[in-house]
Image 1 (tube, rainbow, N blue to C red):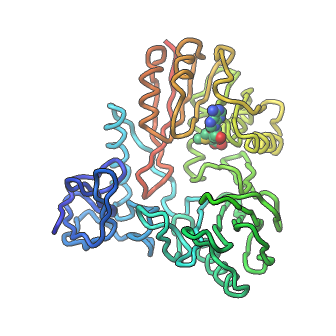
Image 2 (cartoon, rainbow, N blue to C red):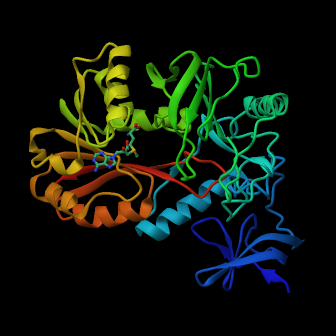
Image 3 (cartoon, rainbow, N blue to C red):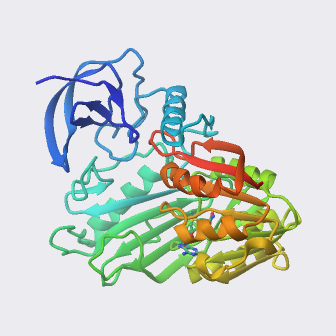
Length: 412
Ligand SMILES: C[S@@+](CC[C@H](N)C(=O)[O-])C[C@H]1O[C@@H](n2cnc3c(N)ncnc32)[C@H](O)[C@@H]1O
């Protein structure tokens, strides 16, 4: 059987009838080698490329085609941007230009590598248990291959047991790498099941090495830190602002594009009193406070709030950037603020919150979104009181189908 790719879907998969084929381009013909069904679709993660597109480019990564991470490395970068613009136009119903990432390799400041008896690396496309052996990760940079080689040596020297995702036997579960791209600082977090770990520091050349324990059955890449060597935090810088990175804290994954994101947010905010509604580790709040704005952050995760306060302190703006642990639903009247920044999780705004903004919202809303579908749903509600004045797409994740939005809404 041969399949001809008609187009790419919003996930960047080639479409041929009910088949979905990763790593392909429109017009290409493939012969399936392995497939699986999910819901009503047939996915084809392995195939022979019978007729390649003239638009295909050589992927930089040696694991391209096996790794489930970078699905679009065979597409030249300007085509990736066009793909994202077309996707946004389909979802939003109007056109938005997407700003390319300043770097398309070495841009990721974090990778979560799975450790299993069969492989140490990332998952293959469409599978949670097939993990391939990683030697290099060009989107992270040279430290990835070195850290994995060091880990293999560590495992072999101490006969450590990798964790089996199906039987739940074994100790070593994840190695998470974080790198401050603008500071050069490097963090290694070894996540294990319950158990002791020999001293890993002779193996890893890092500013900070953590041992965290995840004693639950859930397959997550973090745990309770039980020990660290070197620095408790590493730092990253966005333009002139410094941020602390901890194994259990979130940080925008593409440092170089995050510098553009914070710049756009600063350009869009208006007035003096700003509410940063999903403030996380204070990325926007601290950046804005450094520019003279008074910002209140609200964030559900106490650990992030603690880190946001530390970030404010580190940048000397604790008086202008303050944070409380709270929920979006805790705010009943937004009119006390000149601008409200919204950067919700992928699920977007709760319908009641969107309605409350329509009824008692501020003059200006800066809505940052990593999910164009929920953004569109929320925009449709907010449109009864707000006009969309500016919107930009940002490519935070080159070689993937994801795209971030940053927008300015003004009350009528
Ligand atoms: C996309 S992140 C925003 C990150 C933040 N802008 C930053 O750069 O650090 C969404 C944040 O919303 C928080 N969150 C999730 N549900 C929430 C809720 N109901 N109320 C307040 N914060 C919430 C999450 O913990 C997360 O930090």
